[in-house]
Amino acid sequence: MSARNDQIIERIVAATQFTGINLSQACKRAGVSYQPTSKQIREGRTIPAETIWSLSKAFGLPLAFFMPPNPTESGADISSKLAADANRERTKLTRAGFEIMTDHILDWYRETGGVLKNHHWFADQLDLYEPVDEEDKIMHPISFGENSITTERLMLSGKKDFYNTVGSLGDARIHRAMESHRLVRSRGFVVTDEVIDEEVKGQRLKGGWRKITMRLTTEDGSPVTAVVSKLTWIGK
Image 1 (cartoon, rainbow, N blue to C red):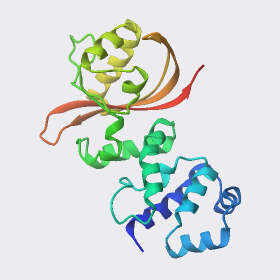
Image 2 (image 1 turned 180 degrees about the horizontal axis):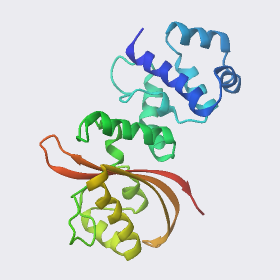
Image 3 (image 1 turned 45 degrees about the horizontal axis):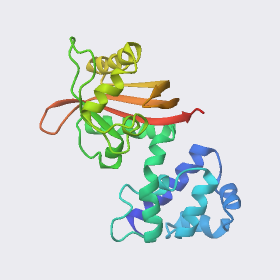
Image 4 (image 1 turned 90 degrees about the vertical axis):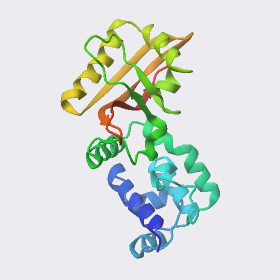
Protein backbone atom coordinates (compact mmCIF):
# COMPACT_ATOMS: atom_id res chain seq x y z
CA MET A 1 0.00 0.00 0.00
CA SER A 2 1.53 3.33 -1.03
CA ALA A 3 1.09 6.76 0.49
CA ARG A 4 -0.01 8.00 -2.92
CA ASN A 5 -2.76 5.39 -3.15
CA ASP A 6 -3.87 6.28 0.39
CA GLN A 7 -4.25 9.91 -0.71
CA ILE A 8 -6.28 8.92 -3.77
CA ILE A 9 -8.62 6.84 -1.60
CA GLU A 10 -8.99 9.74 0.84
CA ARG A 11 -9.97 12.01 -2.04
CA ILE A 12 -12.55 9.57 -3.38
CA VAL A 13 -14.13 9.51 0.08
CA ALA A 14 -13.93 13.30 0.24
CA ALA A 15 -15.64 13.53 -3.16
CA THR A 16 -18.63 11.60 -1.83
CA GLN A 17 -18.93 14.02 1.07
CA PHE A 18 -18.40 17.12 -1.03
CA THR A 19 -20.78 16.23 -3.87
CA GLY A 20 -23.39 14.28 -1.92
CA ILE A 21 -23.02 11.42 -4.42
CA ASN A 22 -22.36 8.15 -2.61
CA LEU A 23 -19.91 5.59 -3.94
CA SER A 24 -22.62 3.24 -5.21
CA GLN A 25 -24.22 6.04 -7.22
CA ALA A 26 -20.85 7.23 -8.53
CA CYS A 27 -19.87 3.73 -9.64
CA LYS A 28 -23.19 3.32 -11.44
CA ARG A 29 -22.71 6.64 -13.24
CA ALA A 30 -19.09 5.77 -14.03
CA GLY A 31 -19.93 2.33 -15.38
CA VAL A 32 -17.59 0.56 -12.94
CA SER A 33 -18.39 -2.29 -10.59
CA TYR A 34 -19.30 -1.12 -7.10
CA GLN A 35 -18.33 -4.21 -5.09
CA PRO A 36 -14.67 -4.47 -6.24
CA THR A 37 -14.20 -0.69 -5.99
CA SER A 38 -15.67 -0.56 -2.50
CA LYS A 39 -13.40 -3.42 -1.42
CA GLN A 40 -10.34 -1.71 -2.88
CA ILE A 41 -11.15 1.42 -0.88
CA ARG A 42 -11.88 -0.47 2.37
CA GLU A 43 -8.71 -2.54 2.14
CA GLY A 44 -6.47 0.22 0.80
CA ARG A 45 -5.75 -1.57 -2.45
CA THR A 46 -4.53 0.13 -5.60
CA ILE A 47 -7.32 1.88 -7.49
CA PRO A 48 -7.02 1.22 -11.26
CA ALA A 49 -6.28 4.24 -13.39
CA GLU A 50 -9.41 3.68 -15.47
CA THR A 51 -11.55 3.67 -12.31
CA ILE A 52 -10.09 6.97 -11.10
CA TRP A 53 -10.74 8.57 -14.47
CA SER A 54 -14.31 7.27 -14.62
CA LEU A 55 -15.11 8.31 -11.04
CA SER A 56 -13.81 11.83 -11.68
CA LYS A 57 -16.38 12.16 -14.46
CA ALA A 58 -19.13 10.63 -12.33
CA PHE A 59 -18.51 13.06 -9.47
CA GLY A 60 -18.22 15.97 -11.89
CA LEU A 61 -14.80 16.89 -10.51
CA PRO A 62 -11.53 17.43 -12.40
CA LEU A 63 -9.14 14.50 -12.42
CA ALA A 64 -6.71 16.74 -10.51
CA PHE A 65 -8.97 16.55 -7.45
CA PHE A 66 -8.04 12.90 -6.99
CA MET A 67 -4.31 13.34 -7.57
CA PRO A 68 -1.55 14.02 -5.02
CA PRO A 69 0.21 17.39 -5.51
CA ASN A 70 3.01 16.12 -7.78
CA PRO A 71 1.35 13.66 -10.14
CA THR A 72 4.40 13.20 -12.40
CA GLU A 73 6.75 11.99 -9.64
CA SER A 74 8.36 8.59 -10.21
CA GLY A 75 6.84 5.65 -8.45
CA ALA A 76 3.25 6.74 -9.08
CA ASP A 77 0.69 3.97 -9.07
CA ILE A 78 -1.24 5.80 -11.76
CA SER A 79 -0.33 5.44 -15.41
CA SER A 80 1.88 8.10 -16.93
CA LYS A 81 -0.91 9.14 -19.29
CA LEU A 82 -3.28 9.90 -16.42
CA ALA A 83 -0.50 11.65 -14.52
CA ALA A 84 0.13 13.92 -17.49
CA ASP A 85 -3.60 14.58 -17.84
CA ALA A 86 -3.83 15.46 -14.16
CA ASN A 87 -0.87 17.80 -14.38
CA ARG A 88 -2.60 19.69 -17.19
CA GLU A 89 -5.95 19.69 -15.43
CA ARG A 90 -5.02 20.42 -11.83
CA THR A 91 -5.25 24.20 -12.25
CA LYS A 92 -8.87 23.80 -13.36
CA LEU A 93 -9.93 22.86 -9.85
CA THR A 94 -8.49 26.00 -8.34
CA ARG A 95 -10.36 28.09 -10.92
CA ALA A 96 -13.64 26.21 -10.71
CA GLY A 97 -14.90 27.95 -7.59
CA PHE A 98 -15.19 24.86 -5.36
CA GLU A 99 -15.40 25.95 -1.74
CA ILE A 100 -13.16 23.06 -0.76
CA MET A 101 -10.24 24.74 -2.51
CA THR A 102 -10.82 27.98 -0.64
CA ASP A 103 -10.66 25.90 2.54
CA HIS A 104 -7.44 24.26 1.37
CA ILE A 105 -5.76 27.61 0.75
CA LEU A 106 -6.83 28.95 4.13
CA ASP A 107 -5.77 25.73 5.85
CA TRP A 108 -2.35 26.18 4.24
CA TYR A 109 -2.26 29.78 5.47
CA ARG A 110 -2.97 28.73 9.04
CA GLU A 111 -0.64 25.75 8.98
CA THR A 112 2.33 27.82 7.74
CA GLY A 113 1.56 30.74 10.02
CA GLY A 114 1.40 33.03 7.00
CA VAL A 115 4.89 32.11 5.78
CA LEU A 116 5.36 31.69 2.02
CA LYS A 117 6.55 28.08 1.92
CA ASN A 118 5.27 24.66 0.85
CA HIS A 119 3.06 26.37 -1.72
CA HIS A 120 4.21 24.51 -4.84
CA TRP A 121 0.75 22.98 -5.33
CA PHE A 122 -0.82 26.36 -6.09
CA ALA A 123 2.22 28.47 -7.05
CA ASP A 124 1.02 28.80 -10.64
CA GLN A 125 -2.17 30.44 -9.35
CA LEU A 126 -0.40 32.84 -6.96
CA ASP A 127 0.17 36.56 -7.53
CA LEU A 128 2.52 38.44 -5.19
CA TYR A 129 2.50 42.18 -4.46
CA GLU A 130 4.39 44.66 -2.35
CA PRO A 131 2.42 45.60 0.79
CA VAL A 132 0.51 48.79 0.05
CA ASP A 133 1.35 52.11 1.67
CA GLU A 134 -1.20 54.79 2.50
CA GLU A 135 -0.03 56.98 -0.37
CA ASP A 136 -0.23 54.19 -2.98
CA LYS A 137 -2.81 54.67 -5.72
CA ILE A 138 -2.45 51.17 -7.19
CA MET A 139 -0.98 47.82 -6.16
CA HIS A 140 2.65 47.12 -7.03
CA PRO A 141 3.17 43.57 -8.32
CA ILE A 142 6.19 41.41 -7.60
CA SER A 143 5.23 38.40 -9.71
CA PHE A 144 2.25 36.74 -11.35
CA GLY A 145 1.39 33.05 -11.38
CA GLU A 146 1.64 31.56 -14.84
CA ASN A 147 -1.99 30.41 -14.71
CA SER A 148 -3.44 32.96 -12.31
CA ILE A 149 -6.75 34.67 -13.04
CA THR A 150 -4.93 38.01 -13.26
CA THR A 151 -2.51 36.68 -15.86
CA GLU A 152 -5.05 34.85 -17.96
CA ARG A 153 -8.16 37.03 -17.81
CA LEU A 154 -6.31 40.33 -18.16
CA MET A 155 -3.90 38.80 -20.69
CA LEU A 156 -0.90 40.33 -18.94
CA SER A 157 2.58 40.30 -20.40
CA GLY A 158 4.41 41.80 -17.41
CA LYS A 159 4.42 44.45 -14.71
CA LYS A 160 4.23 47.40 -17.09
CA ASP A 161 1.24 45.81 -18.78
CA PHE A 162 -0.37 45.36 -15.36
CA TYR A 163 -0.21 49.09 -14.63
CA ASN A 164 -1.59 49.97 -18.05
CA THR A 165 -4.35 47.36 -18.02
CA VAL A 166 -5.52 47.63 -14.41
CA GLY A 167 -5.16 51.40 -14.55
CA SER A 168 -7.62 51.46 -17.44
CA LEU A 169 -10.33 49.69 -15.42
CA GLY A 170 -11.23 52.80 -13.47
CA ASP A 171 -10.80 54.17 -9.96
CA ALA A 172 -13.70 52.23 -8.41
CA ARG A 173 -12.25 48.83 -9.30
CA ILE A 174 -8.74 49.82 -8.24
CA HIS A 175 -10.10 51.19 -4.95
CA ARG A 176 -11.89 47.88 -4.23
CA ALA A 177 -8.73 45.90 -4.88
CA MET A 178 -6.66 48.26 -2.75
CA GLU A 179 -9.16 47.89 0.07
CA SER A 180 -8.51 44.15 0.28
CA HIS A 181 -4.77 44.77 0.30
CA ARG A 182 -5.15 47.23 3.17
CA LEU A 183 -7.51 45.01 5.17
CA VAL A 184 -5.03 42.13 5.36
CA ARG A 185 -2.68 44.30 7.38
CA SER A 186 -5.02 43.83 10.36
CA ARG A 187 -6.99 40.71 9.44
CA GLY A 188 -4.33 38.47 7.91
CA PHE A 189 -6.55 37.37 5.04
CA VAL A 190 -9.72 38.49 3.25
CA VAL A 191 -12.02 36.42 1.02
CA THR A 192 -14.16 38.36 -1.46
CA ASP A 193 -16.39 37.53 -4.41
CA GLU A 194 -15.62 39.71 -7.40
CA VAL A 195 -17.44 40.46 -10.65
CA ILE A 196 -16.16 42.02 -13.84
CA ASP A 197 -17.95 43.29 -16.94
CA GLU A 198 -15.37 45.37 -18.75
CA GLU A 199 -13.80 45.87 -22.14
CA VAL A 200 -10.14 44.83 -21.87
CA LYS A 201 -7.77 44.89 -24.83
CA GLY A 202 -10.61 44.76 -27.30
CA GLN A 203 -12.37 41.85 -25.59
CA ARG A 204 -15.42 41.83 -23.33
CA LEU A 205 -14.59 40.26 -19.98
CA LYS A 206 -17.66 39.20 -18.05
CA GLY A 207 -17.55 36.81 -15.13
CA GLY A 208 -17.00 36.27 -11.45
CA TRP A 209 -14.27 34.90 -9.23
CA ARG A 210 -13.51 34.25 -5.58
CA LYS A 211 -10.42 36.08 -4.42
CA ILE A 212 -8.29 35.28 -1.38
CA THR A 213 -5.94 38.09 -0.35
CA MET A 214 -3.36 37.21 2.32
CA ARG A 215 -0.65 38.96 4.30
CA LEU A 216 2.43 36.76 4.14
CA THR A 217 6.11 36.84 4.93
CA THR A 218 8.78 35.16 2.86
CA GLU A 219 11.07 32.67 4.58
CA ASP A 220 13.66 35.43 4.98
CA GLY A 221 11.09 37.61 6.76
CA SER A 222 10.13 40.03 3.99
CA PRO A 223 6.44 41.03 3.94
CA VAL A 224 4.37 40.36 0.81
CA THR A 225 0.71 40.38 -0.12
CA ALA A 226 -0.53 37.29 -1.93
CA VAL A 227 -3.64 36.84 -4.05
CA VAL A 228 -5.19 33.57 -5.22
CA SER A 229 -8.35 33.73 -7.31
CA LYS A 230 -10.67 31.06 -8.67
CA LEU A 231 -13.03 31.64 -11.55
CA THR A 232 -16.62 30.89 -10.55
CA TRP A 233 -18.54 31.81 -13.68
CA ILE A 234 -18.03 33.25 -17.17
CA GLY A 235 -20.62 35.39 -18.92
CA LYS A 236 -21.28 35.64 -22.62
